Image: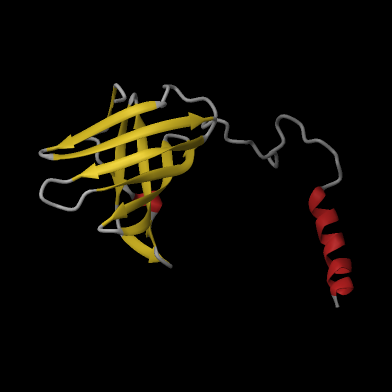
Amino acid sequence: MNLKIFLYLVPVFMSACGSGIKSGPNDPNETKLDTSSKTLPVDLNGCYLMNIGKDTAKLHLEVEGIHVSGTLSYKRFEKDSNSGTIDGIIEGEKIKLWYRFASEGKISVREVYFKIVGGKLAEGYGDIGLRNDTAIFKYPSTLNYEEKHPYLKTACE
């Protein structure tokens, strides 16, 4: 049975590889790679702080190419705070992250988006859904970004 599947898939993969003929510069079938996320207009490495009233959030980014890692913490006035690690990528003007954090003695994971606005970062918000035990945005392309209260670059402690 496995041999039949293999013999069926070989021609499919071979045809997907193409004939080896290179397309010209004006060929409408030519696929262009999006390299805009490889060269960032600002250095995003470092620490950021966001304040809304008595609520604060601290973000530390370490960027290597399009990969982003670091830490994020939310300190909410008279509410539960949380802190944890982030890991994700930069796509164009967006930073797409997975935030793994501890809150109330429980480890959770949720999706976090930031929009790069000059040297500032605006956090995205929108409808949330659950996939297994992870909070994800239902409609990432329609997120709203909190540009009135951006994360501002600051000296790291």
